[in-house]
Amino acid sequence: MPKRSAGSGHRAHDVHLISVIGVRGTPYACPDVSAVDNHIAWLYRRIDGAESASSIQDLWADIDLLLERRMFLQLDLQITDAA
Image 1 (cartoon, one colour):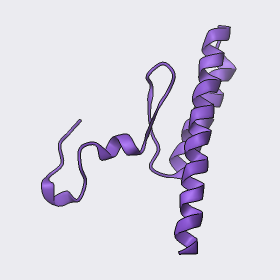
Image 2 (cartoon, helix red, strand yellow):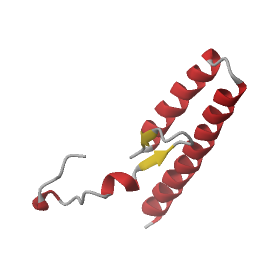
Image 3 (tube, one colour):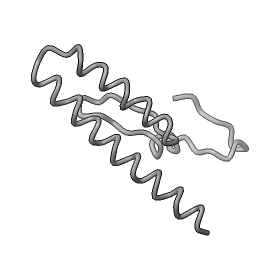
C-alpha cells in the first residue's frame, strides 16, 4: 500500500476502513454506495458463470458482506443529512 504524506489528512490504515474483505480474501474498496453497487453487480455476473456450488456460495457470501457495507453507508448518509 502506498504511503501518504502526513499533510494529506489520511492515515495508512484509512483504506481498511472503506474496504470489505470477502470470504476468500478478496478486497473490495467501498468508499461509497456506488462502488458497493458496482462490486455487487460484478459478483452477480460471476455467479452466472460459476460452475461449482462452493464458488457460488462464496460469491453470495461476499454479496451479503457488501450489502451490510451498503446499509452502513446509507445509514451514515441519513445521519449526515439529518444533522
